[in-house]
Amino acid sequence: MEAFFTIEGLREVVLGVVASFFTAALVAVAGWIGVRTGFNRAHRSAQRHLRQGQVLQSAGDFNRAREEFETSIRLLREHPTPALLAEAYLRLGDTDLATENWEGAVENFKLYRELKSKRAKVPEDLICLRIGRANLGMGNLDEAFRFLDEARRMQELVSHNPLLGETYVRLAETEARRKRPDAAREHYLRAINVQERLRDRRAEAGSRVGLAEMYASTGDLESARGQYSAAARLYRAAGDAGTAGLIEAKAASVAA
Image (cartoon, rainbow, N blue to C red; front, top):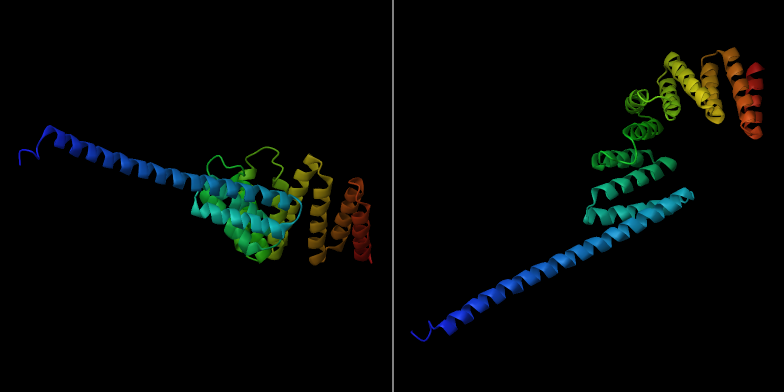
């Protein structure tokens, strides 16, 4: 018993405990490094797929862009980075909007809203406008109006907001489909007022065509003809003679 409790024996026990501690620590650090390395690798891969998707999206190759964004989202779900995941949902939502996948657009834009930070790249009014457009595409007119009107309220607080014209147009389209021609007309006129100030001739021409079609649907053919003619002049001024000719033909058919 005395031999067992020697200083040398005690030293060996202590060294064994210390060695076990450092071994466990090294294993833990190695495990953390492995996890971190896997995270960084997945993060870089997700970024690569996201950027490639943006390139394809800009080129109009929406099917391949969708694949890249979905791959990025899958990687980021496994290794969460909220800001990057939010951007991936945003880009996928834009792709859905461009390809008229309305339900997908609404879902992905809402996921973006849940994840985005206060310093998000895309302002809230633009996301509301996009969700409103997608709901309008689906025929969810009340939901479309709710989001579009929310976008309008935010945009009207900013002087010369360039998006306000489009928001008014979408509200006009929504109200026309809700069988509220007076409200639709007011929104079209507000859109035209904004677009005139911005000197956006093409956008103004599109608004006047929408207003003309609304007038025609209510039997006000004289007003419809006037708006078609004004739109045709704007298209010509913008250098789009082909569209101007088509609109002039519409004006002539209304006159007949």
